[in-house]
Amino acid sequence: MPVHNDRRLFEFLILEGAQAGLSWSTILNKRANYRRAYDNFDARKIARYNAAKVRRLLKNPGIVRNRLKVRASILNARAFLLVQEEFGSFNRYIWQFAGGKPIQNKRRRLKDIPAQTLVSDAMSKDLKKRGFKFVGSTICYAFMQAVGMVNDHTVDCFRYRKLAGRRRG
Picture 1 (cartoon, helix red, strand yellow):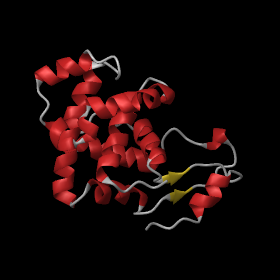
Picture 2: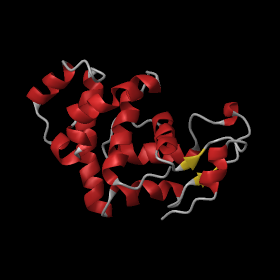
Picture 3: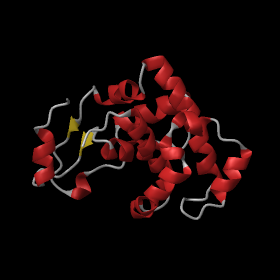
């Protein structure tokens, strides 16, 4: 389903970065822990995390304890706030890559779903230019799928039909 709430978009961006190299089920199983550890994905709070908070996060078994990913979440919070300031909302910025509405693909088989696209390449490049980390094209495409920017359900899936007929509102 399309997500347009800035905090939820930030949450998905952080979780997709944390998922890099791991299974999505690992991150889903830790999602509630992430919400607690990361102040419910409040970017303003995360942007102010200091070395002591980083040490606590790295000792927290409820999240992925990878120093680079933890540090990236703080840098991403800071970059996120700058994007909000520039565009008025992260939603306005990020959805421009999809033309403001979900991209309706017509995948016939799961193997037809790519790991990245020209759109995710462009998103990745721009996010990196703005200082975001763990936002490679594959991560960006997974993010786009997770927040409903692309409908990659196969055409025979009931969800495909439901989302293909949905209008932004």
